[in-house]
Amino acid sequence: MQFIVALFVLRTKCGFDVFNFISTLARELLGFAKDGVAFLTNTEVSQFGMFFFTVLPAVAFFVAFVHILYYFGIVQWAIIKFAHFFFWSLRVSGAEAITAAASPFIGIGESAILIKDFMPYLTKGELHQIMTSGFSTISGAVLVGYIGLGLNPQALVSSCVMSIPASIAVSKLRHPEIDEPLTSGKVHFPEKDESEERPHNVLQAFSEGATLGLKIAGTMMIQCMCIIGLVALINGILTWFGNYWNIHHFSLELIGSYILYPVTFLLGTPRDEIYHVSKLIATKFIQNEFVAYNLLMNESPYNEMSKRGTLIATYALCGFANLGSVGITLGVLNTLTNNSRAKDISALILSALLSGMIATLLSAAIAAMVMHDLNGFLG
Figure (tube, rainbow, N blue to C red):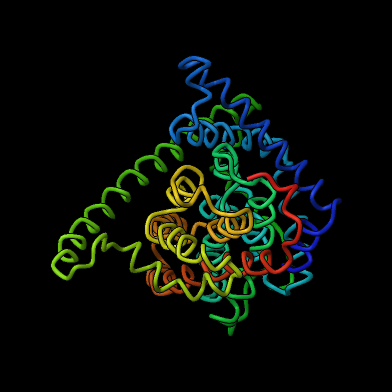
């Protein structure tokens, strides 16, 4: 399934045009968010490529926009169609199919909310799969923000789609299903709790979405800032010790880049760029993909890599498998289960984190295998 998607996007004009159309819509959506930034600041500031003025407003606006689609049932319709396909083709449970199909659109936390009534009754295999799906892809909200950074939009969109079957395959290899899932043989959304009020009109839905978007954008900003600061502190300590051993610039990223060097080689990265790409993957895992993508686009020597190396890096970094996401996932899932499954979730989450990272790297490897003429792909 991954291979077919990669062939469709990277080797056919039809596939390129389809995903280019989708990414063009995403870029135009980002442009509307910039109009809002221009109102708060001015037109010149709204065109800055900075994280604060590009990614965060796009995330907040996208979440609010999705709430309008939710109100009219469009998102639910799209997710259930995807879920039926994966349910039919990969024989997973209904709960797994829904979250796997929803993860690239709305993220790990929101996709788990779709099946919150089933959460206390999920098997360990289902819990592992749900977390793996979330770690292996990025959400639609941050996808729009990344496109704003100048990343290849076709690669980002196709990577999200390719990582859905990969996450299911890797998760089931790592933690096979040995119990009988409650939603085995059926795909449907659980009935809404009567205590939850549906928005009275589309304006209320948009308003609630904007408030949630503010919380998500604020959480992203603070977590990025704190994680980067913490990693810088640890790296400062490592560098201090490293100087005694004549190992200059000793850091977590340096350690991770050498551990991941063979993995990056197996992705098919150009030989002279293997270290650069492995360091980006290590940075993504230790800090987050925001930082790694920012390095890829704006910092030397990463922004001087070949088209092939840049595209492989774009695929390899396109997932939430990082240490910061572990805390977010624990918080969301424990809240949804009222801490009744806290022990199981804590026991499985590190395995799901590594499985999600492997799924994303599988997408990168298959994309690298079918890459041919990259002239149509703009970095």
